[in-house]
Each structure stands twice: as C-alpha cells, then as structure tokens.
Image (cartoon, rainbow, N blue to C red; front, side, top):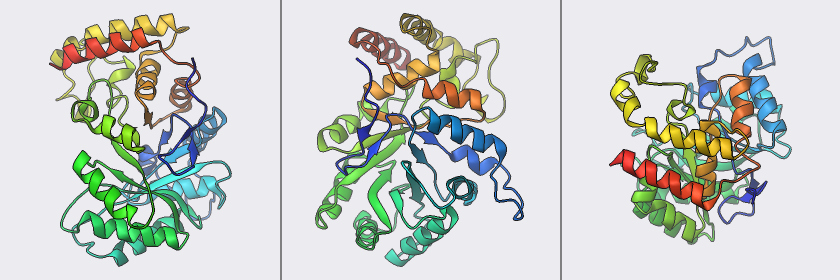
Length: 314
C-alpha cells in the first residue's frame, strides 16, 4: 500500500503532502541584490523540483538567516501560494513579552513572504517567561483577523501540547501540529509518549532533522567521517556503532526497488505518522528526498528497523 498523496494537517482540513521541504538552509544563502527580483538559482531549482514532485508543504522561520529564508520564499512565491501550504515560526525571545510582540513579528514575516496570510504559524520553542496560554491567545487573535489559518508549536512536550490545546480550545481552534526532532537515531517522540499522544489527539508531528544532519544518507562511514561541527559527535566510533543499521536500510531499499538509505529513513517516519521536512542543498538531494513518497515499506520491514535502531540506541 502506498502512502497517501495528501494528508490532513491536524484537524484543520488543510491538506499537505506526507513529506515537506525544510527551508532552513535558505537562510545560509546570500540574497540577490535589490535590483534582482529572482532568488538564488540553486534555491529556485530545489523549489521547482520539490513542488513538481508532489511536495506542497514548505517550512521556514523568521530565525533562519534572520529573515533571509522567508525573503527567499517570498521571491519564489511572487505573492501567490497557489496549492502550496507555507509554514513559518515565531521565536519567543526573552524580550518579547506580550501578544503585541507576536503580532509585530507575524506582520514582519508576512512582509518578507509577501503574503496576506500564513497557512501554519508555529511557536518555535516553549521558552519562558511568557505563559503558553498568552501566546495561544495571540495566535487565536491572528486567526480571527485572517492573518493565519492554523496554529502549530515546535519542541513542545506532551504537557506543553496539552496546555496549548486547552488554551486554543477556548477559542474553538484545534492545535494543528508539533514540530520536533525525530529520526531513526533520535526517537524521543516515541519513547516519551509524544508521538502516541499527538496521534490520538489529532496533532500532526512534523519531523525536523529527519536524516540526522545527513548521517542517515549513508554517505559517512568510519573511514569517511564528517568534518566541521558534526565531527565531534558523529565520529568513527559512533559511525561504527550504527553500521548495522545501514545494512538493514540497504536491504530494505533493495526490496523496494533500489531506494536509498535516506529514502527508507524518510519513509519510516511517514509510516510512523510523522511529516518529515528534509532540507536540500542541491537539486539531486531534493529529487531523491521526494522519491521517499509514493511507496510504503511493509510492516515487517518497519519492525526490523524498529528492532535494529532500538538495539543501537541502548
């Protein structure tokens, strides 16, 4: 059985592809000069190949490149979203203390995106000191004013999700989503009960870092470890430890028509009911990520991955 082409975002009625596109990397790319209305050509190619492959859900944030990712998105959209569902996020910095601060940040994001409203507006983190209820009330006001269509959160625990739901319920608004780190090597959403709770209460889990910073692509080995900021964590010892996982990923990929370890890893998340949002730095990555859709591994293959990943993480 194939994974559905579109799924519902929470209980909002909004339909999204079961795999999205993360635009965090767009914040790292230099913006074109003000005389050029076109975004960086690589971003444009990634956007085009992703959307033409059936992805209609794109996630960004005001924090990504201090607004650069949203500006790139705005240049790509040209003021119209068509069938695309656009999500961005509000960062509750400690100096943002009132509902007015959320409204101001939202208007700035809308300006950078060049849109009259945002489909999904998310709280980036549950940072103090402002109570969750205050932010959810501000989100409700934005919905009432037609500035956003749905409310999401990010990095919220079960208890924090419950608080957000309770606050929104007073305005007859469902919490649409919770965006968290989730992949085969980071399964806290499962072990904490968060995935199960969200699934039962109709909150979509959006999985960021679904390929664990590229580790689950299989391109790194004990003899070819990553460099830079990833080197200290994903060292030769770690890569040797997870090598058995890649044996299984390759086997399952072969059983499903030659899928790559990355595509199997993304498909595993979709089978679990999450919406992975991998980023892409070039069109080949974008095309391969999209190919994680349109098929579904068997329950036995899922169970095998569950077993080997649980053993590795012990």
